[in-house]
Image (cartoon, rainbow, N blue to C red; front, top):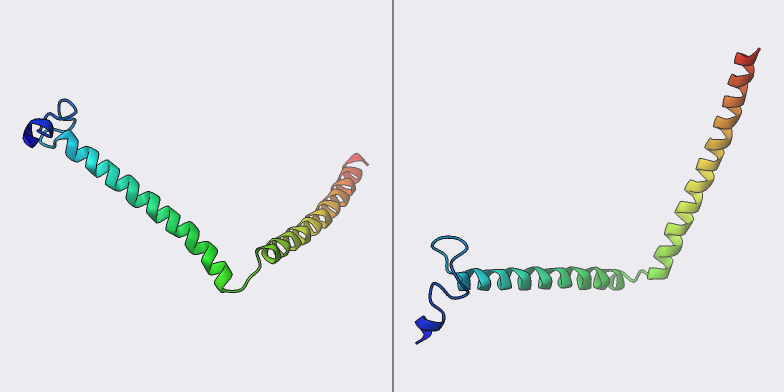
Length: 95
């Protein structure tokens, strides 16, 4: 009786010859479950690592913000210097 329900033509003709669709369905479900579980563990693990190390997420954000602000200042200074060099070059070529 079980062979009648879950035989080689369960869910139609086989997609890959020699492998019943029911086996493929089980493999797809197992793969999805494995990767979903693995992703969930990775997310939880990263959160646990930051709490174990005792680092405050707000502090990390502040540090990143400060680093970005420093880089913005550096780029502004570079931009000003490049603009003055460009103006000098234009004046030399204009004369």
